[in-house]
Image 1 (cartoon, one colour):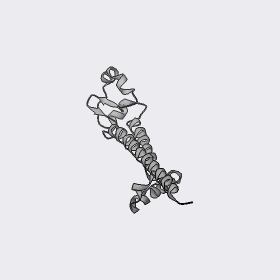
Image 2 (cartoon, rainbow, N blue to C red):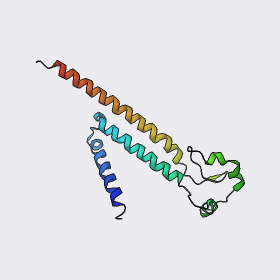
Image 3 (cartoon, helix red, strand yellow):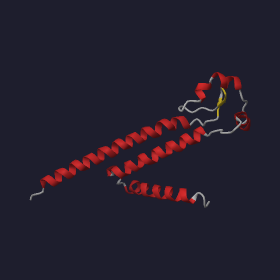
Image 4 (cartoon, helix red, strand yellow):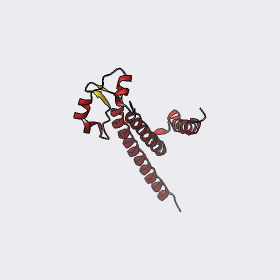
Length: 143
């Protein structure tokens, strides 16, 4: 537990600070909340990629397949070698019908960056509209 404390403490603090505007309802007007959402979504995508790429990780892939109760088909893997060495989508198949990478990983690797891009667009839009409103307010005040 002492090893996890330096990781969990900042993460939980960040999540608490991120959730405060969410609970108070001020998140819709906060470019910072959307910017932090981008960071959290990209962090989630990175963790998801790491989990997917390490799914069934073993020095002996045949052992990893047998551990989950599946047969290992070396002929299938040799025939589809380039499919297993790509960066995306992630695959770690034992045979044509079973993949060690969980089914949710590849869709999450699409959805999380798309949500991050949408949050980034919202953050930029809010920041620009705040800046324009600030300039209009400053030009209307009498000298």
